[in-house]
Each structure stands twice: as structure tokens, then as C-alpha cells.
Amino acid sequence: MLSKNQIKRIRALHRKKNRREQGLFLVEGEKMVAELLASSWPIESLYATEEFTHQYAAAINHKRANVFPATANNLATVGTLVTNNAAIAIVPIPTTAESPSPAQMQGEWVLALDSINDPGNLGALLRVADWYGIRHIVCSPNTAELHNPKVISASKGSFLRVTTHYLALEDYFRSLPSDTTVLGAYLEGDNIHTYSPSSQGGVLVMGSEAHGIHPSLAPYITHPITIPAFGQAESLNVAIATAIICDNLRRKKNS
Image (cartoon, rainbow, N blue to C red):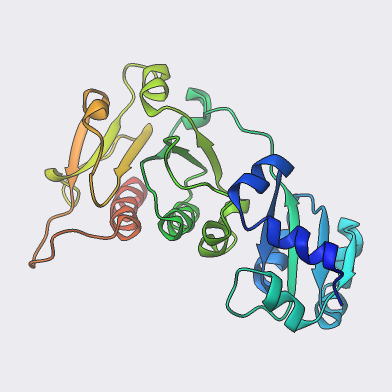
């Protein structure tokens, strides 16, 4: 059974203010916590059922995590998931990473996100980036918070492998070499199906579904691109659109 203080501590991390003040966030569910245990990320404390601690005993011992027994009912009550019968980990928020350098970008694509406010979309975008081998995401300051439990859950563990940076996008673009390819997703632009990407990689900029890429970023976009529509839908979900564009970029790079 969890104590009142433990329950209060976990529930406090549902809120952004407390996550920032304490420098901690939650990772929930069997698969996500198992991936966390297998990673190099530290764990501050682990609340888990007897079944989970038995199944992952070797990984828990290797991680030297502080483990506190909990029932499935405890976890469902104090967590943010609708169902969780395995584990909740409290994890230190990593030190803020510097933006990816030109050397890190050599031959790679970086995903830049402008005002992606929905936590589920940000989590899905982390998953898309991970699938297509994108190691860095640069987010505008008003993009959803990475450590929001909905983001972490929707990422399906990809937050462990994709480094996310928050900074003013105009400052970021000004820091790039002048010959950097910067693709911007618009309703009008070059057809992504026929676009030939640079072998040197570059930056792909995605804006919110409601407002698109902010006009202040337009001067930094070297190649406006679009996904051609064949039906009557007004727009695509940003994560779906990003996956389509990344698939075309990756397929043509490998062809």
C-alpha cells in the first residue's frame, strides 16, 4: 500500500508547476517503465506491483532504483492512465540540452515544431521522429511541455531516444549555416512526392493545424513543401503529415 505522502507526491507531478519546481516527471505503465529500466536514464523512485518487480528484477537491481510496493488499484488511483496494473516511475528531468550543432546535423534531418500545443500530438511526433531516425526535435517555447504525462504516454517510449530542445525558432534558424536546407510544410508548395531532398539533410518545420507556420519564420524557409490532396479534407493531423513527409525524405535518401 502507498502511504498518504507517497500518493500526494505522485499526484503533485500531474501538474506542470510541480514538475518544474521539483525537476521530476512521471513514466507510467509496464512497457514504458520496462523501456526506462533498460535505458541509461536514472530513476528516482519506482512504485510497482509484486508481479512487475519479479518480472523485471534483474533490470531493477541493475538500475539500483528505490522500489516501493503498490497494488494495481493504487497505481490506477494515483496515476494519469485509465488503466495501469504494473508500475509508475518518478524520473529526474534531464539537464536542458543545447540545440543540435551543424556537426550533429551533418547528413541528418532535424524536426522543428512551431506552436504544437496538443500534448498527444507532441507525443505522437516524438514517435514519428524516432521511427524515421530523427534524433533531434527543436520546439518553440509555446509548444506543449515534453514532460506532460500525456506527451510521455503518447510517445510510447520515444522520449528516451529523441532529444527535445526548447528555444526561440528564429534564434535557432539564425544560428544555422546559410546553406542549410529548411523545409516548411504549407498548404501550397513543392509537391513532397516529387521533391528531391538534399543529401546533407536539413530542418523540417511543422506548424500547428490551426495556424500553420508563423509568418515570422517564413524568411528562414528555403523550400515550401506540401502534401497533395486527392479528396476534400481541409487538413491533416500534424503527426500524420509529418510522418508522410519524413517517409518521402527517408525513402528518397535511401533510393
